[in-house]
Length: 88
Image (cartoon, rainbow, N blue to C red; front, side, top):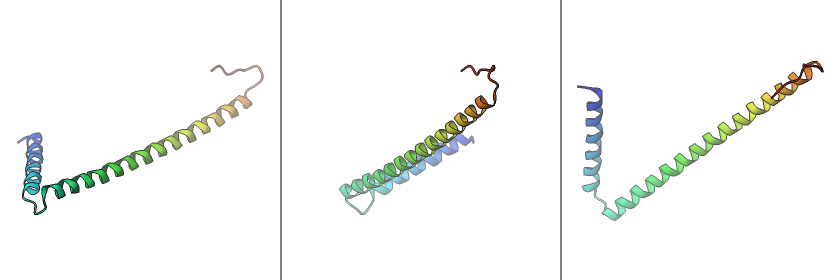
């Protein structure tokens, strides 16, 4: 069997099992839906926090590299003779 077929079988089996578990759960449907909604909100909140942390981290790194490059550029300019000019 190909890997794709195996993976599809596993995923469909997991989905069927999850649906069966929800249908035969001892809780009322409203309680189950509320529980699912709360859990999904927790996951979304966590994912947003991780995304924001990653974006902040990348932004700080970008600013740091940009600052270092500006410093190197100014140092290079000061090392050049008066006749040499840097063209941007």
